[in-house]
Image (cartoon, rainbow, N blue to C red; front, side, top):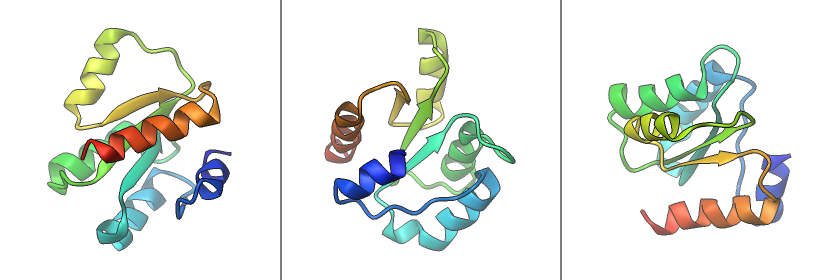
Length: 110
């Protein structure tokens, strides 16, 4: 659903079934990507693990990373995610327009 909304807004969208496939796709497409949108809870490798791997292991600081979550997070958790190098954490419950606005804000801030 998020991918469809982003496509309709003019974004080129690449999708992966799980974190491991996502990691391979990121490696293959890294130089073309502007933003990586990850679900915090993905099978195989969580979005948090993938974000950490990209930032810490891959030393990739130019790629914007946005986490999506269906779980309510407290300030301590949000702060921990920002220390992993994520640019925003967005609840899946936000309206599509707000999701697009927040992704565009992240991109404009880079």
